[in-house]
Length: 374
Image (cartoon, rainbow, N blue to C red; front, side, top):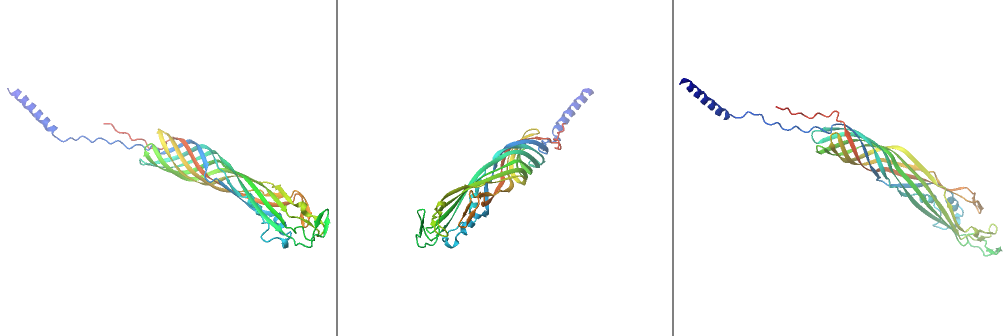
């Protein structure tokens, strides 16, 4: 009987011990939280881009400086004592005809490549440096017109008319402008201006915010440089209208009326060209999406400013088509009568909108954390 009694006692103790253990507090470790996402953006990258560009400042202004105005000098000194008040040719007034504003609307394709480096701080901030270079067909052309007009008049004193008749023409002892002479000079000018950007590069800083681990919104700005070109041509015509010349007996009988009429003379055109590398600045922003490991797409817009250039044209000239030696007016055929020097100023600035694709090497990106399994 003793052996069954011991077995029953041991069984009761085991059951009691089991119930007591169940009532003890649990010592199980808390579950591990998921690790933060890895820094996807840190590292070097390279890619391609393509888009379009449009000029921001399209007005190309031409201002012409007068170099010579022999016509005004001769007319104003021909007979000053009999020149009517309030009249007279303005020295260099024809330069106004070669002054104006051309609308040079530049636009075209731009495309090339970029390289850069990003560094991601925490889960949201990405900073980096990017350099790019691309070819460009951004260019445009425009034209301007200008005009000027001035006037001079004389009136000689009237003597005792008439004193003699020569060839049926009554002559007086007054000068040829006894009835009043008028000279009106009109100039019409025109010009053509072209400008463009042949290639352009930038070196920019970038600072962005990750709205999601794979979507970056950023601002960017820095240095811009590029090859630009420009050209201009300038021409026009000058017209002189002479009226009121009459016959005169002094110093010898002569019929000056044969010189009345309209004279239209084309100008010898001038031209200028410019080509250079210019340095300026750029700023803008964009969005970049990491659509799969190591690959991203971006869309961005940049304003660039490469400064302005002045194009100094050869003179726009007027030469005499004939020889005149009469009454103090001595002009030889081919003699230079007027000369004006146009200067055109072009500004090279605009907007670039482009899309690009980048491959991210991630050589120095930290590895993703690994969870230990127990």
